[in-house]
Image (cartoon, rainbow, N blue to C red; front, side, top):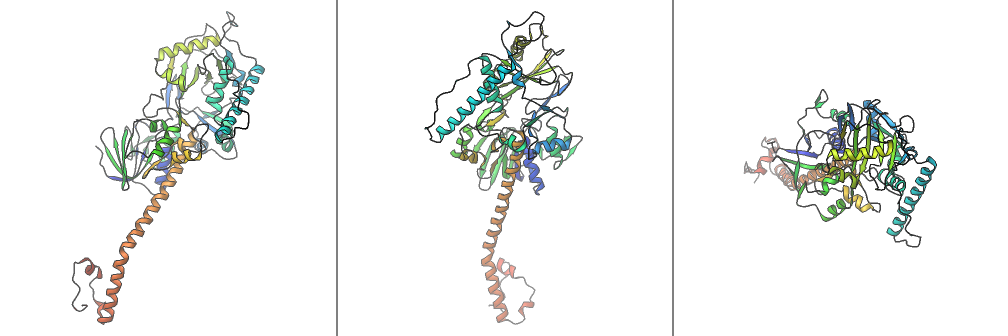
Length: 506
């Protein structure tokens, strides 16, 4: 069992926000920190795995927001460390929408029916206009303005309408206003395609303040496999209790767990969090984003320019809709990725990989014909059923307010909250988590500085009566006994009671 020696700060979670928070603490002279990570690795929702002979990203896979007026800090880290990436162009995805109908297949063709690009583009534009108007109507109603028309707009019904609606709302559009990531940092996105993985950026950050050797963190301030189950907090400090019975004490805690974990019962707070905090936590949506990887003996899908992404139009919304080939990232890998979200993600997580493979192959044969080969292997991440994550990223409600944002990131006593869900402008993104860790730590450092000021002021107030008494005694000594100032007996000893006051003074 670890010693319960008290630290200045405990950081719970070693993802992007946790590591960036710890780095800022160390840079500001706080060396007696402890990082408690529930899993056996750092990274959180950034996680690589070897699949089909290459490194694939099960969680965050893109650096979103590049090429704008400001530099994305995560892109800066990637550039500095030489992380290999490749540009992803989604703009042509809607030119590659496959119909689920089998009637258009010829016996020898390995290509299904693709909707004409003009028809798909027209459907896409109508869906965008409809989505924007719906969101504006919701905002107006929320603000009490019922004067404008709020008639229900047409809902998606056909397979292509459902597919486009899925692309819009599960990939692109979450709010009426332009997304801050793209406004501030640029509209380009780059897929991480490096054998060292996205997590390499975390190791490079950790090297700046933790002892590492040959790419491994050996610093005993980072403690892996430490599942935090209880936080006992008071005005005097925080006690952290882990699942294996270890007890850690600190002046402050930075809690960088996901919003899904905060909504679960993994961590007990004693005393419980106040109502304003729990209500804000419950208001956030937890999004589940599942990338399923399929390895094939050879590629049978179109490649080349404008063919990286393709869409499957099905009568059930989100049913194996969004596909990507990995040839740009890893040429010759023969890997396809299909992305599921939310309800479909949870459904697939609950079934066997064999059943998922059967469903995915059925969809691929709808698109590319019955003669395509079976996949050699499948990899299905399970973020929803991972008790250390409970989802992929946060999403603020469409109709939200500043109070919810403020309460989400506001500290409770000596517990400070961070993570992508506390980022007002960049929630849901890796750079959101990174910047949140920095911002939260700056707020904590200000609090630590204020606490020191209060302590110094309190000590001064306590000493003032004693200093006044000392001054009085010194005056008496000077006035009553000439030359007594040459006496070598410290006044402090009189005041402490260890020596009596000499009779000459009395």
